[in-house]
Amino acid sequence: MALDDDLNILAEQERLLRFVTFTADTAWAIGSALRADALRRNAAMSLEVQLAGRVLFHAVTGEAPPNQSDWIRRKRNTVLRWGRSSYAMGLELEKSGLTLEARHGLTLADFALHGGGFPLLWAEAGCVGSIVCSGLAQREDHAMVVDAIASVLQVNVPRLSFG
Figure (tube, rainbow, N blue to C red):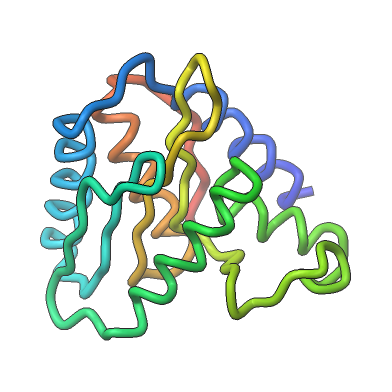
């Protein structure tokens, strides 16, 4: 039941966190909010905001390991392929009981089904980019991105529970 509850919350977040306009300044505001949160946590993280294949914000904090860039790439691929958060896709796969390869014919070398990737959703066109962070536990990565987007959009969204 908790899995279905989480999936419902994630779907509602994706429904509510949509942009009417998105500019380089918007990307900077989201990226800066993510960076400030990572610094507040004293976390070694990698952060990215991209629109239509163009990276508009990228930063690392602390001693972020080089392999985080691969996590960013794989989470981005997941978001762009399905237009859903990477965490939602991971939970959907968990619910199905199938592997990524069995269900979609894809490999983990190119896709990460872990929290931290969120679609940049434009109200008129759907998924047009991604907002991704990596470095914390997947549920925290997801929550961090949701918090940054909700703050910039000034929208209240349901949150996942912790603990």
